[in-house]
Image (cartoon, rainbow, N blue to C red):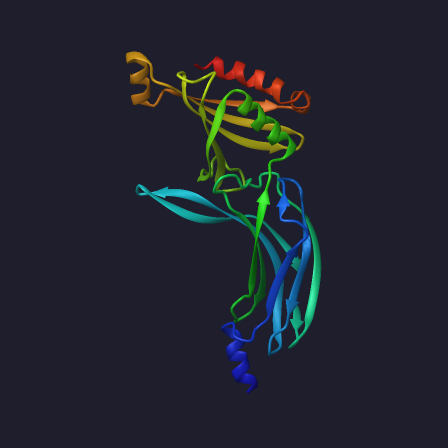
Length: 257
């Protein structure tokens, strides 16, 4: 019977279970993730190599004109080293970790979750998934409010495959805006990437000018109607608030119309 139970446990029947309870599901980039992991032993003794928490999200990669959804590990935390889990054992482990500053925020269809896993040799690893609601940091929110003040409407937020721009991640989170007032008729869209740097923030703007006249149509056809601009906002800029940042962004964008 013991051998039979071990065989069942190896495919997940009567095996160990894991459940994570987060203190809060609303977090921000660079904030703190905390909670408790509950582990319950199954019908047989099992050797757990380690317990880990992973922060994951989806991103889109294009291949042969097809859009493929991939999963990326944004951060991974080791909770415990190996131990032996006896039948019926009930254990709990508290945790508190710093979240990465480049954690994607969950606007529109962006999805971020915590996955808790037990590494068990020669068995199906039990796991638990908990969604996170990631809100913008203070610095990001100031810029988002500034862009809104300029009359841009957020059309889409996507995680796109871009390993050369993503740093330690294979993707970047792109905010795509359309003008509704001040720049309407001059721009087709404005795309913004955020690069948090502690108390400062670097932006990569893609300014997509609207084709006007023959030269404009030629530029659009040749792909030269887009301009990329890097802009670094220090704490002294951000502490002045959204209206001041909006004025600065307006000056930068206007130079590239």
